[in-house]
Every structure is written in structure tokens, then in C-alpha cells.
Image 1 (cartoon, one colour):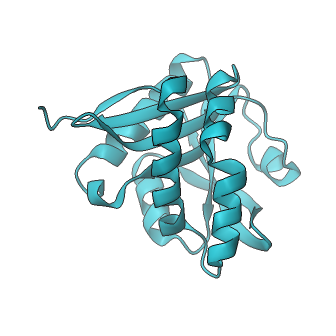
Image 2 (image 1 turned 180 degrees about the horizontal axis):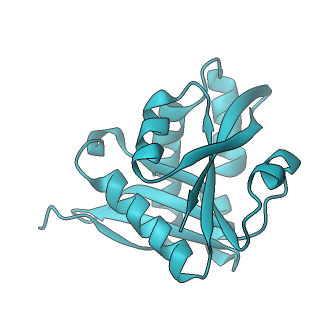
Image 3 (image 1 turned 120 degrees about the vertical axis):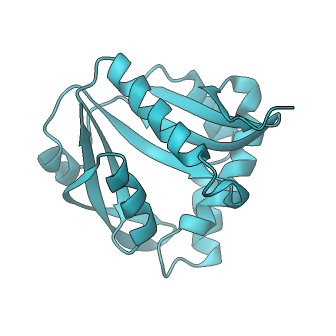
Length: 178
């Protein structure tokens, strides 16, 4: 089998495997101070297999999967609806715009090009869909992720809050313009 990563649109049959990857990866990038209970609540509410089936059936969302040796090792969730959060809407005035809502790769795949391939595919999906920019939120303390996003052309455009379970966290809004 090839060791080359393949990035493809996810399908409904991928929902269980996507949820398993999400459950394994979300705690690794979770904002500092998040409790195990808060993380579990977020995973159950936002990253379950049922929620992935909803995302996959929503025409305003796209889910990309990174496959390696027949397994999903990462995913990206893109939202094409305009930002609803007033802080984001003030920082991201470009239209049409896509939100890179989630992008996670299993820890054993860090540093081998999977994340970069997934990011390139996410940006290309938005660009070919007619968007002029992509935005994302990243915890202000997650310096590693910020470096990765900066490397791919994102700049800080503003701030917003993000709730995990019962805790409010502070994010940077980062923007990539085409």
C-alpha cells in the first residue's frame, strides 16, 4: 500500500471513522484549562458520528478526509455560511468567505505532510468554490497551530470567544485572502 496521503471529500459512510478521529484529536488541541468533562461534552455535542452525518448532508458544509494506508488520519470541516458571531463578522468582512471550522490530524501523523496536504486541499476547495478568503479561530495560547496557519498564509484579523463545555476561551480570528 502507498504511503502517500490522499485528500478526498468525505461521505456519509465515513461518519463513524471521522468521529473516532475527532474524539482522539480534539483533546490534544483543546484550550488550556479545559476539563475532561468539558472536552467529553463538546465531543458528544459537536463531533459525534451523528453530527458528522449532519455535516455531510449539509450543502453549506464540506468535510475533507485525509486517508493514509486505507485509514482516515485527519479531516477538515469547512462552513460556507457568513460568520454569525459579531466579533468574527467585524473582523472578516470579505464575502464570499469560508470558515475552516475544524482541522485535525492524528498525532502519529504530525510532521509527515498530512496537515499541509489537508490545508492545501481545504484552501483549494474554498478558492474553487468562489470564495475570496478563508477564516478560522485558534486558541490564543496554541502557538504551534498559529505558526502552522501563518505558514499557510493566515494572519490575525481579530479575536473571538469559544466555549468548550462550561468554559469560555479566547481565540484569534485568522484570515487567509486569495
